[in-house]
Length: 257
Image (tube, rainbow, N blue to C red):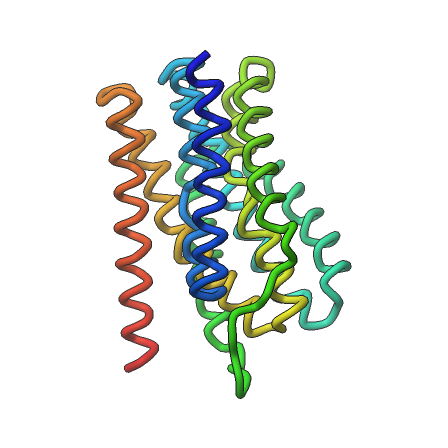
């Protein structure tokens, strides 16, 4: 019962903190923070607490497949919206997500998901870095309802996945864990209101953050049965944060140089 109430306390609080940070420091930081394994870590934490570490372990291949599908969706949206509008791009990208997620989860190969994800992240970082910078930039204002919507959506997603985990099974539960309830709305609104440069900042930051997410899942998979839920999840989150900000620092240094 305590875990049930924690879902309604921790999830919206984290969503609020990341959304306010994005509003305060701009879309690039927002994309970076939204790429961190916030929802993923919470899903895995509660799956392990409620269904056991073995269930969470079996959910990791599905989660890695979902991560690859998410990055394929971002790359497709970024490229296709050079020729079509945001609405058509969203619809087409959702179809891409469904197709890639189904294919990757069916193959069920961790190594393949890792290779595909790293390849997609590289393409996103390279492609987004070539987007021309406008003469003037600023923080893109978001409608007031966006932050409450993210908080509600993330909480409902977590509750829905964990409540139906036994019925869904570990692979499907893991596949749903990386769904970008923070980054996807942020990317679309940044694109519509700020243009392609703002979209590029979001997808680039999210791709950098996804490197940390990849590390999160791999360490979790290697350690959860040996270390236990709390230590494994905590160590995996620390790894994700460190890897994300180290990569961001390296890329920023190279860009300036």
